[in-house]
Image 1 (cartoon, chains in turn cyan, red):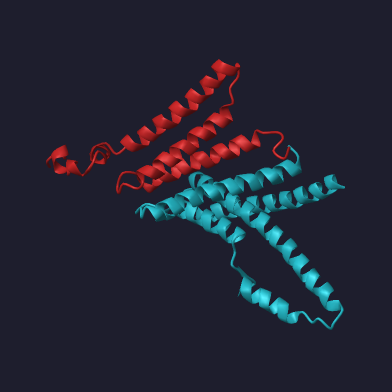
Image 2 (cartoon, rainbow over the protein chains, first blue to last red):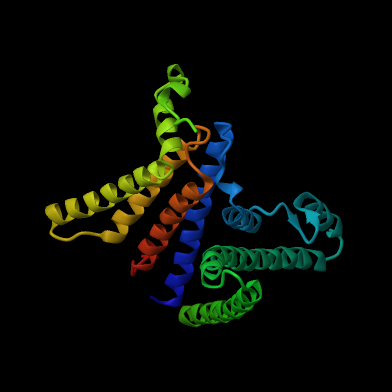
Length: 156
Length: 111
């Protein structure tokens, strides 16, 4: 399986996980069930992590409406470079948003899988658990960077 | 200490009282019931494919069984004190693991 397939597979799995947990959360909410899947801290963290990555309503501490208003205020129609700045800002926002989505979602999935495994392996040593988690997270981060690089190279 | 009997429950409230009583007396009843649903669906689907097509797709059967079990567990969670949060999480986790298993064993996801 190549890097491209891994990226797409990660996204598809993430979307499924988000949709499936959303079903559970909304179903429990609609039926006023006392037991919700997010009562469990691990699922709750996973859901809030993925939810925050995809549907973040704030960006750099500002709401999206505030960001849009500021961007519109910054736009000066008399300045010919304004159009370029406007488009550049939007383009960088899209790139930053995409990177944030892929990284955030992948980390959320990774944490939700890794945390229970490490809890079983190291039940009485949270320090060791944290250290192992940091090392594995670093490895995954490097793999993600290399996967993106390979994706770009294969595209060329 | 007196044993809990069905008389201690309001059986006129509905058929779910029987499940509540059984789950109260035998706490592992609901997890075993869900496990049975999972196993029957998974193996039934797999061997049905083997019988009709000559080969089976185990990851797909596992995923279908996991999703079905999670949905049934979620429906059971509407009744208070019938399903514990641990059981519900295990059902959801089995569905998620099934999906990961399914997609990672596919070669052409993007095709």
